[in-house]
Amino acid sequence: MPKVLISDSMSNVAQKIFEKNNINVDVKTGLSEEEIIKIIPEYDGMVVRSATKVTKNIIDAAKNLKVIGRAGAGVDNIDVQTAKEKNMIVMNTPGGNANATAEHAFALIMSVLRKTPFANETTHKGHWEKKNIKGTELSKKTLGIVGFGNVGVRLSHLVKGFDMKILVNSKSLESRKSEYPHVENASFDDLITKCDILSFHCKATSDGKPMLTKDHMKQMKPTSYVINAARGNIVDENDLNEALNEGLIAGAAVDVFSKEPAKENVLFNNPKAILTPHIAASTTEASIVVAEMVANQLSNFLLNGVEKNTV
Image: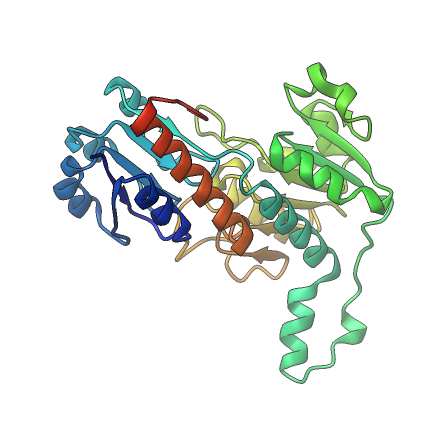
């Protein structure tokens, strides 16, 4: 009978699906790398979200591991190359939390435009800052979306009612642009100079270098805003902090960081930056969907050899 380790917190629907399929499952969260290395030889499958880092050391120790499932889309926390070398299958759940992530990106956009966190904080303290809080309207602005996968597509639909112009930078859009008549394809350089809001929904670069640096921000409108709910190293955080302080751009909202958990960061306490702790995909609905997807995929692979959403 196959045995699976769930090493991150997720909906218990995953555990129930494994049990229903007569697959032994252990839920052990918050383990260190060393603790996982000690127990991983027992397991045929492993399920993670974003907290567990499936390192080369873990994979090398996993003598019986056949499949690693990521309850989510990104697999940055999994050493995919080493897994492939060991003939292990790595699966993700694309689209499972796309709506949650897009909605959070939209919430960040509205929060930074209307200065909602500052308004909330000061009002709670009894400070009536009405004269000092003047927001910006989203209506009729230009939204630049970098990356047009499930999340980028969903965000483009969420803002339809605001009569916006939507520019997209995506290698794959050209082949499917007939499906999305409400957006326009643009080069990265063209997009950043024209957009009022720049929102990232793409993978990190293969070399790990940031896509957006201070040189890019110098080309942007001083009234523009940067939103990053994709990957922490996509935007150079030091450059972003300087750009905010120097007035190169008007504000930023960030859900992901170059180092997580972010206990220290150069953007902390910058009044022009809204920061959230990588919660874009954290909704009740999304947690159930990705847990169902990953458990069903692993069960089908371990029992029937069916590969789905492999990376």
